[in-house]
Image (cartoon, rainbow, N blue to C red; front, side, top):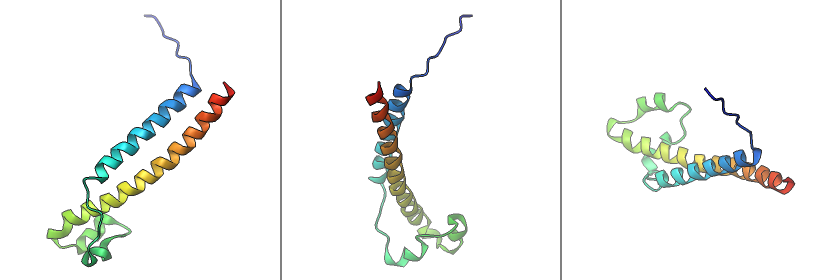
Length: 101
């Protein structure tokens, strides 16, 4: 069996990281486009529970799907922001590495 030596390339690793963040952001944007984002007034009280699973006890069964989609839409919007934050940091590190190369 021949062992393959893997050489770590920090620039390529950062390029891969930035690319993965781009893919994640695109995926979340696609998901966001399929979800409702406007919270009806009568459901606003359910918007920010400390524990979503426990909060469902107080949700009428016919509203669970709607609330679940709205909660997930809020989660996805936040994920886009956090992925953008992390991508920005990785891209800055990549730019510094490329400038030193």
